[in-house]
Image 1 (cartoon, rainbow, N blue to C red):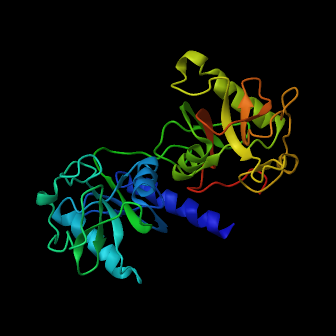
Image 2 (cartoon, rainbow, N blue to C red; image 1 turned 60 degrees about the vertical axis):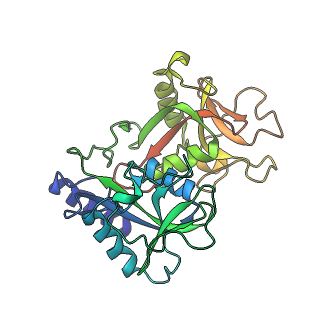
Length: 310
């Protein structure tokens, strides 16, 4: 409860600040004109880039003097960063061109690059990491490193009643939670990541009332509005993790413990379909984990998911 109060206070402060609001887990730096977040859980470059993108930001690069100063201050305060942090500087599109995510070329970056290319450097895709006291150094994109996300302040943002600047989330008076339907298909694991990055989770149904809320949400998007992937339903936050026909939510509960286990007729019906979805009827179904649209759920007063039954 104390943690939740702290988050509510933090969001309230952000609202009072007005123009400096983005996300409660990002820190605004006026000198750089944007928000920063240090991710301590290591990831390869592609996953780091994806996570920042899903959070509404970009994988940070030393694109100008002010941003560079903030990045260096952040990494200098973190212990055990001898291998550095991933930046958005890469040559994955063309081996002879290093640019930031924003398209700023290596030659224009106000940061030390003297040690960028070591004797071991070879052709192929490389991603630059920012190392304390060394500057940018080219390395393998597959290395797992911490990273920093950056959101440039380009427009005035306002916090909605769902505790986010993402207007795709809508508050349900029936459940007290917010929901967002993504009408394009992603693999279940990426849908799971996307919802978490947005400050929520893949939706978990805790009652027949909530099932009807999601059914009505899905009904607003007829099959013609689905942009790729299966159109007959939506991924939810449950799966057969151990392939033993014990279906659990992303909160670790069985469907029965969560409060809703209304399967469609003959469902689940496959030993190789290990991800969970909801039919347009509101009933549950087992389905393959390839691309399917999905529903995210978010507590209105928290950047992180809070299950209904806690």
